Image 1: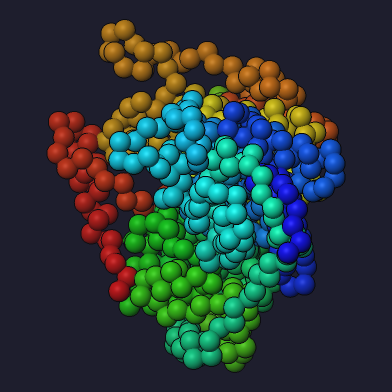
Image 2 (image 1 turned 90 degrees about the vertical axis):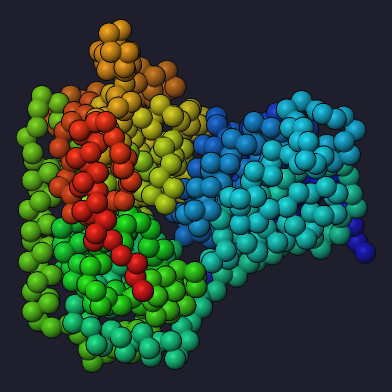
Length: 625
C-alpha cells in the first residue's frame, strides 16, 4: 500500500482540504478553512499542521484567528446557514476551558441542525503525564474528560486515541456533516499527544472526495394521502420553515401558493421564502406572530408544514392552531418532524415535495372568499406594522421605530442578523424580507452573544451582501470580541448597537408574569432597598466598540439613525451605529401566547394576578392528536 508518514494533525489537515459537497451538480469546498485559538493542547499539533500546510502548500486549508472559542463556532454556523448547510468550518481549541467554551456553540449548531466540525483538544492518551494542566480528575473513570460534555450536544462524537482511528472517524464525520437529516455539531476529540504522533497513512485517505447531498423524493402513496387532505380543506394554511430555504424551495413554494391560494405563514428560519409583499404572505406565526398569520391559524382546518420543526414559538405553545378538527400534513426531509402533531407525513426534500404537491393539485384552489379574507387580514396587519414604525415615541425612540427606519434604508439583499432579547419578536412581526437570506435570526437556541460572531461568518459566506448585525446591549456585553476579528480580516460589517440599559425582553416578560422586572435593568445597587434599582450605570458601549477597532456613529433619534445608517453603508470598514432606545418603549401588539409557568402560590399580588391570567391561557392549550 502506498503510504505517507505524517502526524495525526497533519493527516487531518490534508484530509479536510480535499472534502467537497455537491448538490444539483454544483460542487464547493465542504471545509474551506479552520477557526482556532491555540494553547498547549493544540499549538504543537493542529497549529503546527496548519502552519506547515500554509508554508509548504501541501494542503489548502486557511487558518482564521478568533477571539472567543464560542464565537468561532457561531461564525462557522452562520456561514453554514448562508451556504444552505453545504459548507462549514472546522474549529480547533486547546485543552480544557478552550474546548469547553465551544459547547454552547455546539448546542446551538445541533439545535438549529446546522453543520460544524469541532476539534477540541484532549488529555494525554498515553497518560504519561497525569494529571496534566487543566485535566479533570473524575473518580468514576480515568478515561473521562471534560470533552465528554460534547456528547449530549453533538450529532457525532469520537475520541481519537490512536492515529489510525482518525480514518473511520473522519469519514463518519463528513457523512454526518453532509446529511440534511442528521447534521449538527460533529466533534472529534484529539488528545494532545496523539495530535503530534506520526503514522504511515494510506495515500488514498487524502484523495478528493465529493459528498453528494441528495433530494429525497416523496413516496407516491404518501403524496396521494397528503393531496387528498389538502383537497378537502376549506381553510388551509402553509407554515414555511427553515427547510424551505435550505432546499431552495422558494420559487416552487411561491408558485404553489399562487396557484392554490393557500396563505403562507413563516417561522424565523423560513422568513423570506415567500416575499413579505407577496399576496399570499401573511407573516410570522406563533407566539410573536403577525395578526394575519395567527388569525388564519386559529381557524385553519389543514396545516401544511414545509420544513418546520414546530417549536413552541411556532405553535404559540400549542394554542395558535385552535380548530378542534385541525389536521397536519408535514413535508420534511426528517421523519422526526414529518410525524409531529399526528400529521400525515410526507418525507421528502422540500422543493421536490412542493413540486409534487403542485402536480397533484393542478385543478384545485381555495375559495374566492378565503382569498378575500386573506387579503383583508394582510391589510390590517400592514396597518399594525405602520403604527409600530411611526409610533412617535419620545424622548428616546421606541425600538420598533428603529426597525422601521432600518427596513427603509436597507436593500433587499442586505442581511439582518439577530438572535436574542426583544428584537426577534419585534422582527418576526415587523421585518419585511424579500430575499430568503436577508433574514438571519437564530431562534432555535436564541443564544445571546451569537450576533456579532455571526456577522463574521455571514460576511465571509457572501461578501457581496451588506451585513447588518442588530444587537442589544445585553447580548453585546456577552460577546463583542469578534469585532476585532472583523477588523483583522478586513470585513465590512455594520453593527447596529441598540442600548436600552437593560434586558427589554425578559423585563417585559417578568412584568407580565408578576415578577416586576426584577433583576433585568442595568442599575446601581440601591443602598436602601438592597436591589439593583438605583441610578442607570454609566456604561459607554460606543467607546468599547471604538476600542475594539470599529468606527462608531451615534444617533439619538430616528432621523439621526437614518443618517448614520447611510454613512455606515458608504463606509468601507466595520462601523458601529450606536442608538439609545426606551427600555419601556412599546413593542408590537401581541397576537399569540408563550407558556412560561407562573408561581402557583405567592405573597405578591402581581404574581397572583399573573397566575390567574396564566391559568386562563392554559385552558386553550392542547395536544395535537
